[in-house]
Image (tube, rainbow, N blue to C red; front, side, top):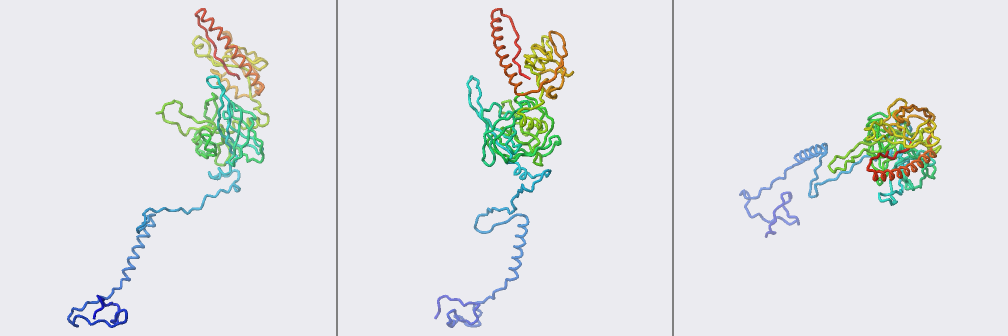
Length: 455
């Protein structure tokens, strides 16, 4: 009797089936050579150890090269998680005169930087008054709420608001400003603010690392960018027509960054970000201009900022008391000397006391040739109120030397010049109308001097 197709277990030595029953009789005679041969199970321990060692060696080599193979039926894509310690910024340990890492510099100064928004009321090309808005940056210079920015950021503003990183916003009042130096000081009703530390811009060297925190585009608030000092003492003419001494930097400066601080590596303010050179050709194929930003050296305006905070204006600033314009190139062709044409003289000013008259043409100051109003302004700007200057004047075909003791500029004098400018504008308009009528009557020609600006 057979139990199915059972086959003897070669490992079992008692020749019994699993249940303990005796094995059935073999269907073949013993000794015939037909009995199945029971193979002894080989001991593969040595082979397994060698194979395991080889796998470990291969895996170790792959790990050393940064390459891992994930075996099996799962996906072969593996994501790896870094394990470094997060950057720690301890602003409490920062000391003056210590080089800061970018995270430390940002953490130590971002609460001193503000975003500035203004509301403007301007007259459009059709004569209608329209409302608009502008945005810029600024920085706190005193714990009791004085803030520095660019003058062009707040020029013509009917309202000014500043915002801090923590969400606090304040209405700001204009303390005073300097259009020629593009600086302004604002005041907010706050206390306990964190002011910046002012540095020494004269010690900067080309190649030194600088940073700025600002509000590019008026939307990307409290953005940190870095770069180098690309050049010093650049003479830059701004869109407002003012020629200024500037630091050149490749730090990213865009619309909305104006008025923000330029820091050195020690976290000290060494400049006021003010301008960026841009392509104005209007060509869609023209290459854009990158890496050409400019900042006002802080040493050039530090005393002005202090004066504005204390007096509301810059003390010691010289003023001549005139309205002037450049001699037109058409007039030069007819023998009129190149220089500065005096449109009007403010009564009681140093120009009036020194004998300067309407119609005079200033050709030199202190022996240096003057070919334009900007050149005269730049020369006078190097002086202080109370200094004496000598003007070379062309008057009625003769050369005259006049000596003037410069007045101090202030808001009252500026208002007086503004009133004189309005009166001259009205006078010029009436004169132009009379000349046009005369031209129509006799078919002749006339030349009208262009309307000037005051100084």
